Amino acid sequence: MYPQNPQINPYDPKTLDALGEAFDATWVVLHARDPFRDFERVDELRTALSQKLVALAADGVTDPVELREWALEGLPR
View 1 (tube, rainbow, N blue to C red):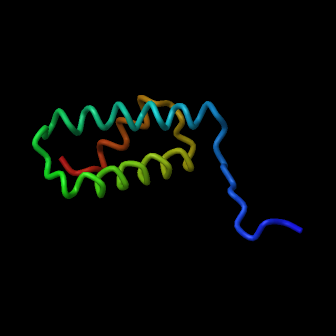
View 2 (view 1 turned 30 degrees about the vertical axis):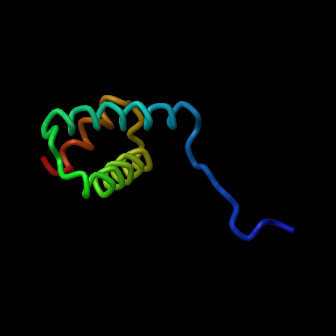
């Protein structure tokens, strides 16, 4: 019998590392743009960034620099 909610990770370790690196690099840029960002909305922004990066990776973008650049284009300034 199989578990009802199996945890499936479609990304290999290299892609996961790229996603983490891209998230960190993008977050630095976002913080530099607005160091006094409304902290009530920080969780929303982190979620939006994570979702954007995962969607990009699903589309085949796995280079951390490209991930960062594409993610920044779709996020609020």
